[in-house]
Length: 66
Image (tube, rainbow, N blue to C red; front, side, top):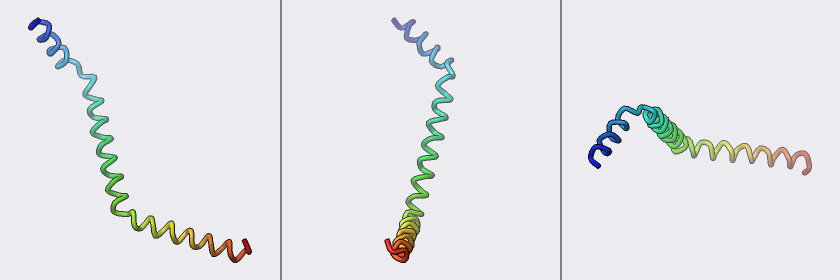
């Protein structure tokens, strides 16, 4: 039983296929943090931008007679 466990541990330590998965996971977390930070910092600016665009569209439609 102990021999099988030791063989499993050795095989796991020799297996390097999981390393790339871990790297992809770390990269994904970094991207998520960057996007979340950008949204937190620029969220109000985007709200203002889209509000201004909506106001301009509404004004243009009113001028056309819609």
